[in-house]
Structures are given as C-alpha cells and as structure tokens.
Image: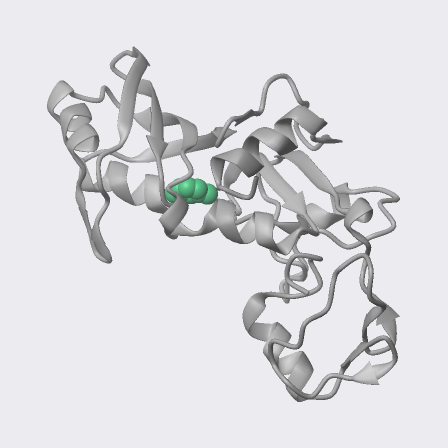
Length: 233
Ligand code: URA
C-alpha cells in the first residue's frame, strides 16, 4: 500500500487493523498478508488502489510562501494548489520550509518517496543560499567540516563559494539529510544568516529552467536514475 502511495508503511498497519483493507473481496485481518500489486484487487475502504502504471513522479518549482502540507489551519497557500487536473493525489517527497523555494518532488509512489528521504540512503540535496554579509573562509571551512546543531552534528557539507561582497554572499551547499531547517541552522552555527534559500538539485534531478510555480512530469530516464540511486532497481 505504501508503494502504491496510498499511505505510509506505519499507517498501512492501522488501515488493516481498522478493517479497511480487502484483497480480492476478502477482508484482510493479518499484517503482512501477501497480495500482488497490479494483479490482485486491493481496496482501501472500497476504493481500488492505483495500479503501478498510474504512478506519478513530478518536479515542482516551489514558490516562496507556499506550504508543503496537504492542508494548513492558517489558510496559507498549499503546493497542491499549483497542481492541475492530475486526477490522483500526490504527496511531497520531504518538505521545504514556507520561505524556501525550488525543487520539490511529488509522487504517489510511497516506496520511492520513503527511500529518497530516509537518512540511510544519503541522497544529496543541493541549495543555492544567499547569506547576509560577507561570508568568511573559516565559516565556509566549518560548513565543509560540519557544524554542531541542537539535534546533533550536521555532518560534512560540500560547500562552494559562488560570489561575495560586503552586503551579501552566495554559496552552494550539498547535504545528505533533510533535518528541519537544516541549511539555515548550519549557516547560523557557522556565524551567518541565510536570507534566501533555493533547492536546485535532489539526487540526480536538477531544477533547471522550470519556472517558479510550474511543474512537469519527470521523464523515464530521471525516474530510472533516482530508482537506481536508492537501490529500487
Ligand atoms: N534547509 C532549510 O533550512 N530549509 C529548507 O527548506 C530545506 C533545507
């Protein structure tokens, strides 16, 4: 069910426990009951789960001020507001902060999303960061070595200086985890402040020239290369 993007692995057990799942018309009572996706008729609350050929893989250029959740109690704009006529629900692969822009993957393939975001797979994410003031060489060296954050060491980050003057600096930084506000906190730990953050790459997918607020389907090569990266094929 998580591969089909119906729910997370954890919630799949809850759906089974609550009697929502049937396979070929029979109520599933045991966890781990064998069923073949695309062959057996698997239903959640009577709804057939999407077949493998209905899996969607999208890349969106997230604008500033949009929320990555599927709803927001404060009524702020949601990234799903930007998706038109998909006919199926998709979920963001990890999150970008409200004030971060750039590359966001969306899918209904739960296994793909799980692997791309799980720390075990160390999938690199690259950000272009505008930093207030002139970033120093020692601060860049600290980012490269890794800094200490409140939830543990950040680990080393590939960091390149793109430009700097007295008012602002631009760096490119690659991390392999997606902890909450990680890049902003790393820059703060190095003694500076990030004022603008754009994710420009995730694994081997690049944002390229996709317009802010626009999305496209990943092409087959891109889907295959990400699946290879996380050992799915
Ligand atoms: N790091 C951050 O600080 N924010 C993001 O949105 C992503 C990575």
